[in-house]
Length: 65
Image 1 (cartoon, rainbow, N blue to C red):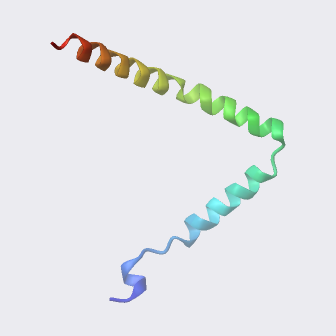
Image 2 (spheres, rainbow, N blue to C red; image 1 turned 30 degrees about the vertical axis):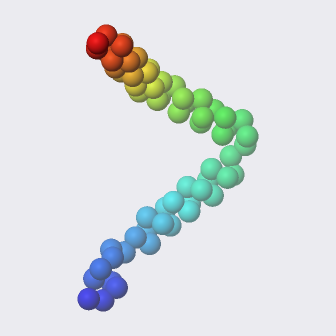
């Protein structure tokens, strides 16, 4: 089996990733911080749900004799 048959061509994916890195590198520090703030806001419900689920599991475990 040739290497081409074994692995798909991902050069376009790698090129897009490199372009994204260059674009992010060109941003100002303030713009990068704004992106982080947005990410934190976007994941807050997930973090909160995980915390609540873990707390509920701890409470259930503490009630088991």
